[in-house]
Length: 360
Image (cartoon, rainbow, N blue to C red; front, side):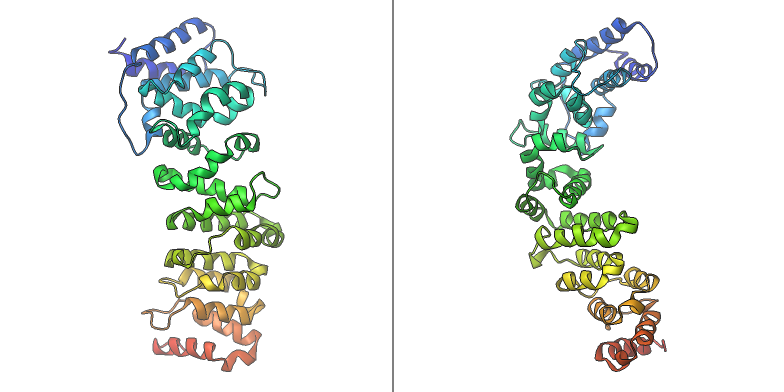
């Protein structure tokens, strides 16, 4: 069986989705595979989730989960007596190789929590505690963040661990992005169980790269608001910027400035409010082309000429080698909408910048 381990466990995972009858044999193979690998070690990996999916322990864990998902699952029904001892054994952190199984259980924690909250609270949720045995919390969070979703009843139970994860952002590797997305989206939800102070502390403990991801999440959230963008800006994003977004100027990197400039133009009808809220974060961009093109596309120069000019003044350095390709069109739109700005020093500076590049 050891010689066949990889092929056999991979096969049992595949048939788990469709087989009928012979369940005793199915679970016998799962249990024997776990016994076979019980004393194996585990190699460190930057992506333990991928390792879990490709290890025999991960295969049979996924097989058990696939079989379970085919059953009549109901909230509060409890795990079946045939699955509970298997999943309980997988959660034993003394068995290093079973971490492959724990990762896949963590990936499906919401379903397990809904069906059997008592079991999940006792055996699975402790894995998310950063004070737990070395390696377990990063692996559990990476498992969960491989398929992340906001589920408030679960987050209420693991609230301290969820917030503490911000301080362990660098331990998450590529799973840092989905964590920051969850943290940011949870902060945008009204009436959640986190206080603004808790969310601000967690968000401000992120490193600069995490803050950059949070700003990107704000853009996606605002874009996803569709026809409700104005209300979403005023009732969600603006409040987030005032009470949760970091205030330390040292994180105002060129990338963050560029992302917040994009957030301004994404606000559309609320562009003036967005510019005023974020004006201290705006500075000359290394490549302002995209933002300037969006400004033109959304006709913000026509709708808000004074704010559009102040925005362009902030993000464009006339010492840059090449001007943005749509800068001329933006300035013309501003001038047509508000002719008195033709002699404004800011507009004159940007026009002279274009002339130096033979753009009249």
